[in-house]
Length: 212
Ligand code: SF4
Ligand code: SF4
Image (tube, rainbow, N blue to C red):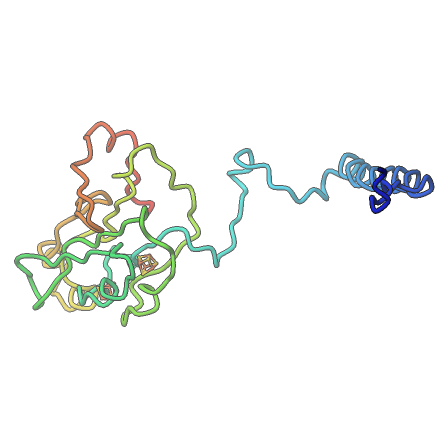
């Protein structure tokens, strides 16, 4: 017995079929028009040719890619090692180490460890610092082959703040009150990880001192 309830197969109307081909063709021409426009007017191309344009590339200032510590023209900072930014960081990407034997103040910064590998660039540390010591920069080329190289020390020296140093008698007194620190001074175990010391060869080839 035949099943009379079965629905007949729905056919695409012949006019709709050709209409679709026509629409597709028009769409193709629209795309080609844009392509040929850029071919004949290369100055209007907005696509960035990275990394070929590295020398001229300008990133938006609002881009948060690298936490930095502001140092003045003399190379001194205003960090008092108050730990407020460390406490505000939601994922322990900051560790502030105090100097064991402060020279001129009650507490002095030794190293300011920042982990780029776990930072979410939320900017909280920058906002809570009472002395505007921290700043986010748009420096974005941070790729490395070794995770340990994503742990930075942001302070260039261990010692008192620029305000305290400014009160010293002369440059000799200021020089005696500080100890130089490098960008890879550390490392510090944070976030439950322990990362062993960085091989010396890597420091030589990937020395980024001065960039941070
Ligand atoms: S930007 Fe946010 S996650 Fe990164 S170090 Fe600062 S507070 Fe922590
Ligand atoms: S960067 Fe600012 S908030 Fe963080 S320890 Fe230094 S002074 Fe305190």
